[in-house]
Every structure is written in structure tokens, then in C-alpha cells.
Length: 561
Image (cartoon, rainbow, N blue to C red; front, side, top):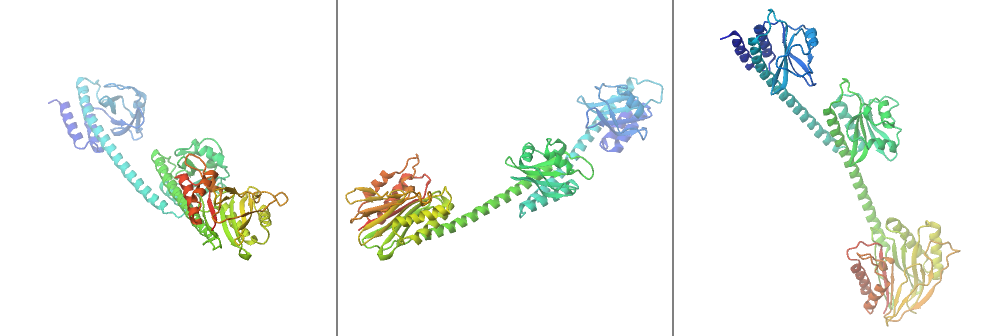
């Protein structure tokens, strides 16, 4: 058997014993050097950069020889000094041989000068082709094992980061307030990235402010940046970015002055909450793509915690408002008189239903001297809490003034009080009347209210419209009020309503209207007051169907018996 073939057998056995171990490659190169009688031999494996090869094993190379080799040109099967100057002058090599698999370069085998004065013949070339096959297997196996190790390490790092993110997310979720979230976020950033400074900036209506800082030098702890200037930059910041790449402007200047190098946006549903800014690493190494991914995931955890806190605060405020409105509704319900008084010769029934938690409608019956009774139905402009507060004031004033003077003077005094104590866009429509049950006479003043319906036994309809303007619009010099008198016969009705009855809207936008209400009253004539009241309410609800109420509904029925 030729000696070169024995050397190949020996080389194959050596590589097979452990292709990815350094001592294996060292023995393999020793066999190559011995067979080809060269003074030095080196194996360069492909590096990360294109055309760059990194020294993996060598024999006879000088200690100061570089650890890499550049070979950007196309490979040939057996090349001479393609990159001759670098290979010869820096490594002492005179021949570079490509080691390939499936036309893909894996490594370069460099050979030094031969110790004999003879060119490479056919036998040496055949031996080299065998060497290429053996070393290709060794290099590929080593590369595969190295990749597996890299992936294993990467997986381990990913698992550690995932565990850290889960732990941080749990801690952030349990944070009691935003300050605790900011502090925990800064602590994790400094520990994970090993940096000496970081800052959390929050964006609000009044501008970008520093919410938490670690390691910032004095003078950079304030953030005099308007909301518009900050928002214009933050809206274009969708992922972590070096501060040097942040668009030019006040925000980048602010971060650079604070010696911060990485900007991580804090955003929720395309709404910017602020910015996490991180300083340089203590080691001086740049942030990798893996670091940027971790920083973005960490920022998302913090944003989730901040949004949960905000929503929790909103829920608490809503619950507090609901509790307060419930108390207000209970108080308002107690302002309405109940039960109806026993009035000789008359029946009374009334109801008021707010379209919101509390309303601005009012009805009341107030006992007066001599067995007389004051009747009040009023409607405050607006809805909800503001209207209910004004309604309570009108209720108290009406109770205090009722019966102290003729009806027109009582209403004039109410107007004077409201004009002096309310805003110009607030007013009250009011129907005020005083009933003398003995004579069945009613003196009334209608101050801009829906004219009540007086229905005779014969079905005739009379509207009580005499009075004056709504209360609170004009001062006493411009507002004049007139009282009028009407009488009742047995079986006659007087129905006082707010515009929540006549202007009730159906699903298609139609109003209930005066004519429809008059027809309901004619059909209910002769029934007790409570049944007349129920007929009105039922008719309005049937008309409205499932449409949402657009105003408070108030009805007071007075029936002569």
C-alpha cells in the first residue's frame, strides 16, 4: 500500500476519533505536514463576515501570526497565492487550498514551503483531495456541534429572560401605584443590562416629565419639554432605538445631555405614555438585537401594569361616582312628597322619573293656611347632577315662599332669587298654583312651563298658559307675572306634565305630542287619579318602546270628585 494512502487511513481514523476536538485537528495537521513535508500548516474556518476565515488549528505558525485570513476571491480546487501577500507575509504560507462541501466554502488549508525542492505532483494532489474530504467532515461536524451549543446557550438565555420577564411582570402587576412601577422598571433595567444610569419619562397634558431616574447627573433631572414637542417624536418611535438615531429635536437633545444611549418607547394602543431611556453599559459593549428585544418586552410589561393601574383608578372613580349618585338619588326621591294628601273633593297622584341617575324635574304639594294646597311642577334646564342641584334649591325656595303672598308675587320672588343666584344659561320652567278645595277654585301662574291640560266632563280641553317667562332669564324689571283663576266641576281633570312627556321620542324620532296626550286623557276620563296617571305613563312608555329616554318624565294629576 502506498505511503500516502496509509497517511490518509491514519488521517481518517484520527478525524473519526473526535472531529470537533482541538487535539484531533492538531494531529490531523501533523499528518498532513509529515506527508507533504511542509514546515507549517494551518486550518482556517469560515467566519461570520463574508470572505473572512478564522484560524482553528495550526502547526509551525509564528505566535504573532494573525488569527484570521481574508480571502474574498472565488475559490478554485487548488489555488496558489490568491491572497498571497497576506498569506505569505503574515502567516508564512505559500499555498491556500479551499475545503468545500456542496460548493460551499467551509475552510482554507494553508501550507508553508516544502522542505524538499519538488512541486506538487499527481500523488500529492490526490492526497490533498483526500485530506479535503476528511477535514470537510471534521469542520462540518465541528460547525454543527458549535451551532448546537450556540442554540443551546441561546435557548438557555431565552428561558432565563422569559423567567425574568414573568417574574417582573408579576411584580409590576402587584405594584400599588405608578411610582412603584417606575422604580421596579429602573431596578430591573440596571441589573439586567449592567448600566449606571436610566430614566423613566412620562407624557402628560402638561408635557414630558421625569417620573423616575437613577444615576443622572445634577441638572439633567428635569425635563422642560412641551407635550407637543415630545409627542411629535414619540409617535414615530415604534421600537427601541439608539438615542443617536432618534429624530433631531428637543427630545434627542434632552436624552443626549443626560448621557442616555438607548430609547425604548412606552406606548399603549397607539397612545404614547412616555419613554424608558437607558445609559451605556459599564463594560462599554453595545446593545445587541437580543438586548433590544428584552428591553421592548420589559417596556410592554411596564405599560400593561401602568394601564391596569389607570383602569383600576377609573373603575374606582366610577364606583365612587355611582355611590355618590345613588346617595343623591335617594336624597332626591325623599324630596318628592309621599303619600298624596287627603284633599276634600279631590284626588291627587304624581310621579317623576329621571332619564339619568338624578333629574331636574320637580313636583310638590304644599299645605297652606285655611285648608288650601299649593301645587308645583317645575323643570330645570339641563339634565343630570347640575340640574338636580338646582332643582333642590328651587324646591326649598318654593316651600319657603308658598302661601306668603299672592301666586304672582310668589313666582316673582322665585324668579328674583334664581336670576341672582344662577348662571345666565340656567333657567327653570314652573307651574305654580294654589287650590281652595272648599270653593273648587285654582289660582295659577305658568312661568314658561308646558301648559297643563284641564279636561271637562264633556271632553272639552282647556290649557292653563297664563303667567310669564321662565324663571331666572330676566330680572324683576323685565319679568312680569300674571295669575289666572279656574274652577272645577265634579269629574274634571287637571294634568300637569313636564316636556319629558310631550316631547318623548320614539325609535323613528317622532314626538309624543300634545294631541296624543289629550287623547289619552279623554280615554282615561272618569277613572281615579292614580289610574289616569298610569294611563299617561304607560302611553309614553309604549310610544318610546326601547328608545332611550331623552328627558325626565314628570306628571301630576288633580281630579275633582
